[in-house]
Structures are given as structure tokens and as C-alpha cells.
Length: 336
View: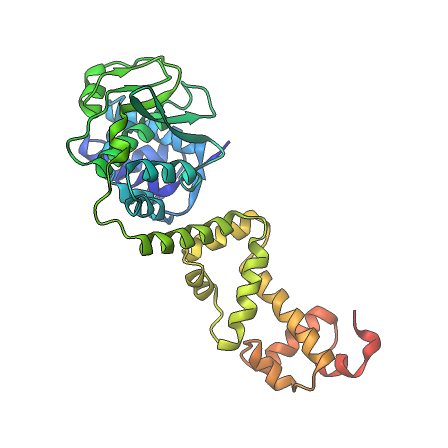
């Protein structure tokens, strides 16, 4: 099925209004609330087929078949979040586009890929969708129009593509696509791609900061950990580290991981767990170890684990083992 980053829909409501449509009505048609995008963080992901359906219904509601291309063309490189900023810190356009290729999964997961290369004197940036050309038409137009914006932001206003290719059939009103892409546009082609003279790949990016680039790479690595199978273990490790500080809320842990709290909650849910369950497990593990292997008092341990008081800790301990921590410590035979 695949997933699409919510941030790629930045400006959706305004684009619909600019074309005299009602964005709330478009969303309601699909059984969504009018504040669907407002209620989701830009780093959240939505189902790919839902994204395609929203773009399709917006195109129909506004009577603009090229709606998705218009939306992509109004985007800035910042819409890509950390990856967009990373690209702007690259040495030249070629390495920036390689970052786009390597980190495409931050925008779309399990539904498409990006490739960058050179054929003869022409460089290309291609967008390969894993679905059929007609099913993925709107997503392709959105991605290609935004790709145009990205390359122009990197190269400067003098840059122009040589040609633009799309896999799907030619829609009505070809003139609109010619205006958006400022180049010959061909449909029914082998792949979705933007071609331009390869000399642009060597163009240096002004004000690139190697130090900031390293920071952004670290941030992106941390974002990758949110999708990794070891995410619960990573969160539990941070909980163990931060418990003694007395501030170990999910918001604090999310800040440490440089992600939004809702994003962390959603990623944990995808792995059939939650922050509260992980916190409870860490507390249980620490309590078990300290009671069995140290002389720490119940009150001290309760405070260390972040409970409001000794009573709250005792209640949690009885839920784990069926007896109080004091009795558990006295009865080695009751231990797991």
C-alpha cells in the first residue's frame, strides 16, 4: 500500500480555495474530518491510496485536472523538512540530489523511489511509482512539480528543464502542464523524469554549511531509528537514562529524539506498544534489580522511578508481582 508524509500536503486547503473550491467538502467526501491535516503533524504518515484519492477528488471538485501539479509547484524546498535543509547544505547540486534520492523514504514509504543520473549530456531525476501509471497519476504530478521547485531552488532562477516525461496518459488541457513546467511535457513515456543539462550538477550551492550538514545527518539518523525494529529498545534506553532527572515524560523523550510527540506515539503504536507500556517495563526492571541487589529503601526507589509517592509505587508493584515490594524483598521464593 505505502505511506506518504503529511507534510507534502502543505498548502492543500489554500490551493483548493484559490481554485474556488471547498477543502472541507473534499475531505468530507472521503469520510475525513475538515481538520484532517491540521490534526496531524507534518512528520506523520498517511496511507498512499488515501493521498491519491484526496488529490483526485480535489482535481474533480475544482475542475482542474492538473490540481496536483499546481500544489507541487507552490511548494518550497522546506516542505521536505530535514531532508530539504540537508540538501541545501550540500557541496553542489549533484550531491544535493543524491541526498534527495537516498532519503526519499522520509517523504514516501514503500510506494515509490527516486533516481538521479546522467545519460549523455543530460542529467535526470526520475520518480518511480510502484503502482500503475494511471492509479498513481496525481501523486506523480505532485512529486514531479515539487521536484522542479527543488532543482530550481538549488540551481537558481536561470535553470530550466530540457523536457519532462510522465508515464500516464496525456490529460486534457496540456497547456497548463507546459506553463507549470516551462518545458516540453510528454506523456505515455517509460518513466516519470525531469531532464536538464548535466553541467548544472557541478554548480556549487552558496552558503552551504558542513557543520550544519553533519547535525542534520545526525537528526535524520535519529528519525530513521523511529522506523527501525529496535525503536522500543531505543526508547527504553532513553527512559533509563532520563528517569533520575525526574523529567521522563513522553514529550521530553520525544524532544531528545528531535521528533514530535505524536509522531513517536504513532510509530510505537505501529509496533504494537506505547510509551506508557515501555515506561512501566523499565520501572519494573529497575525495581526488581534494585530490590534484589541493593539496600535502597522503598521510598528512595519510589522517588527514583518517578512515582508520585510510595503508595503509587506499591500499587504498581502489586500489579506486577501480586505482593508488596517490602514482602517481595523478604521472600526470595516469590521472585521470578
